[in-house]
Image (cartoon, rainbow, N blue to C red; front, side, top):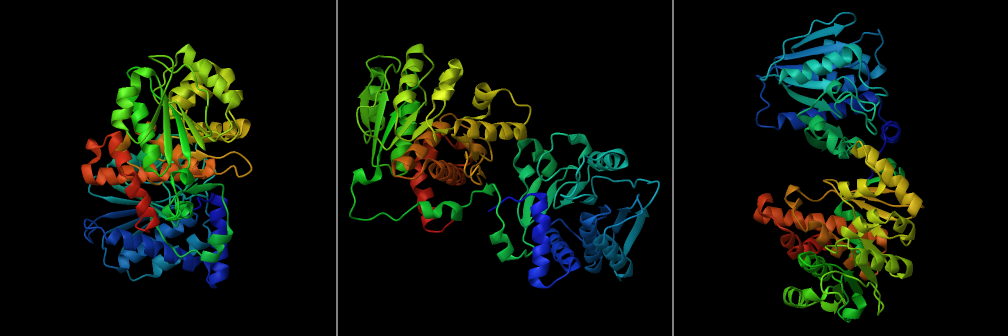
Length: 512
């Protein structure tokens, strides 16, 4: 699914009206009916509720006025509307919806604010429907509108925002003051989520999020492209092919994993097992000699290549051809290990994944950044990213920095978070946001599993960009399956690994 900009959305609305032979008012009615249907389907949304609708002068206000009218016509008898028209000019759609509201037989208490505003009392038993400003807002809320936002936020009322909370921009919000943005308990957005929905700083502003289908023209949607995408099962299904029965393990590639050190052998176990469980034909683990018993007991399916050092990895030479190489889980940052990594970066010809301590080694020796082979996949969490590329003040600034870095070094960045982002370098320059995963995956070793998954898919001949996208989705889906069975509190990394096969099967069988 594409994630479109505010400009794209306006163009799609216009294209829908043209293709379907409708006017913009019909689209407003369609959107408002979708909002009302969602609200009235909720058990606690009863006709006896006091509903206060706050509408602005633009098309978001038109949606809100239309919602108010439909609710009143459906028997909601305690609807109050405040239409802010302080500049004496409404959009054509807002003016038309105002007239329809005033001419309606539904019972509505209507106030149009043109000068001063006497705020109504709002309490915890009330519902506020926020339609002040939508994605067309170009500047942060200020003055009286910021005061209205604060009034709503401080009231304790149940706040429903139409399309987007007023004051929150659809894309970037570095200039916004969060206390001057309406904080919703429920955001009912149209057709697709907005880019700003994917940043953790905005979670409390958005509340629960529901995407409503308002019937935008399918042909127009197919023809419109965006560099922002949400990963869904259909996005990656074509990458998972049904296996030919006349194949052998060599047909599914060999993974070399440089993983583990004294006290961190669990990382080697988790990453190697994950590579095999997502379909790699062979996995070899290079780890300190001390790990032999652990590895060959915990993962008998993997081959063991001992380092000459007992406690740390001191050599990352490749003695055989491998279709993918993964480095990092549990390797530590010993000087011998950093030297070994430098040698590998200079010589490695296979697709490469760098994670965890491989990234921390680079932090200790920043010159290694320039040695990373093109189209390498790196998988930092937020802390690792900031240590590598500089402290970032917000998630959106971190994403902007990641886009710069991916282009500069020609690498693929898997920036791990709730909506893990896969940032691709040019020529595509696309950013994919993951739609799977849950809070139960915030557990030690989950990242080691992801490293193995991405490397395992790369070994099977999937291009690094696609392997990263596929790996993140399958890893999250396996975590969702584990959480459903065990509960979020009980999930550990091996539970995720154990369900990779089920996750892959669910995608192939179109069960998700």
